Length: 92
Image (cartoon, rainbow, N blue to C red):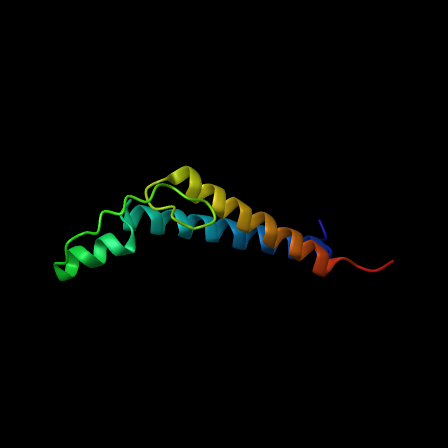
């Protein structure tokens, strides 16, 4: 099967998207459900502020909530795919 340039580009985009998703999920598994503030304050011995900020979507407070993490990842993948399609569209 001979692939055109557009098909090769789409295949490459898919491969990069899968690699990014695997790396993001691995990073989430490594860091756990604690945010950077919690890890930093424990490391330097500071008391935790306990502001109790709940889950947010556009504030990117996705620590500890895999659904929001995957939603943000999915949104970024969709936006990047749409931008790719727009930039790679051939004028007729």
